[in-house]
Length: 170
Ligand SMILES: [Fe+2]
Ligand SMILES: [Fe+2]
Image (tube, rainbow, N blue to C red):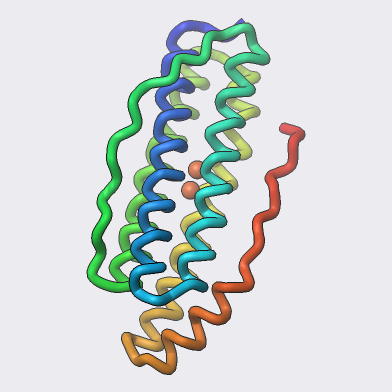
């Protein structure tokens, strides 16, 4: 059975992961508007990943006899200056989420909730990946700058990203 503190914190994280999906969908739409369909595709994969993250929290709450409580999702920004601004905002957002996951881990340890601690280990590793992926793309953008040729090449590369569902087992 999940305790009320963990249940509440996990419901809040469901909201945060769903907000991440919403934010990245807004970024994807903005990138379509910049005529960068490859970048937009990359962001759509992010949306699928974040939805999968949210559902992991959802399933964990239910599996442990808790109650899922859905709350309002904040409206994300809709306008960014260019692709680099989008990727900078992505990295900053992932860094914020890493902080949230670390706080959840601290809470699980304080509450001596071993099941939650094990469950959260996957997210600790995932956040390392998430930050690395955002930094990698941002790094490539820093090399190409806003040169049309470089952006075109990078957009083609990002068009190839496909969604791989996270492993079911934790
Ligand atoms: Fe996430
Ligand atoms: Fe993420």
